[in-house]
Length: 130
Image 1: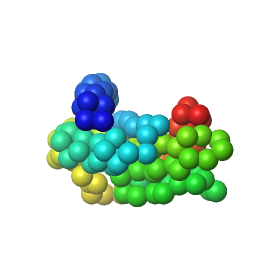
Image 2: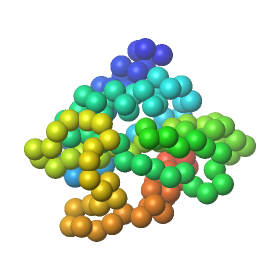
Image 3: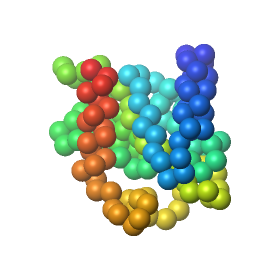
């Protein structure tokens, strides 16, 4: 598992370096292990410049557990379970990691992102996993 976790961190760093300021990165696994999920995104958010974790809400009726680091989907007849987290890259000049300040539902230009959009991201991710 340690080798997989290091590979995941390398992949996150590579994707992050190509992400524009204000961009979002959806991290998803088909694992239920904390080391590959919550711990991985917490570690990355603490180390990556400008990284914040955006709250996600699971789709209604999903067997899931939402926490500040993301959403864990429990195994069901439809899929084997997994994890989804949304990382947001701050604008240039913002500090490092954590959950960040300000209104996380705001996007560039002041437009609001609705929870239904976050539900869509979580649903889309789970469709890719199954």
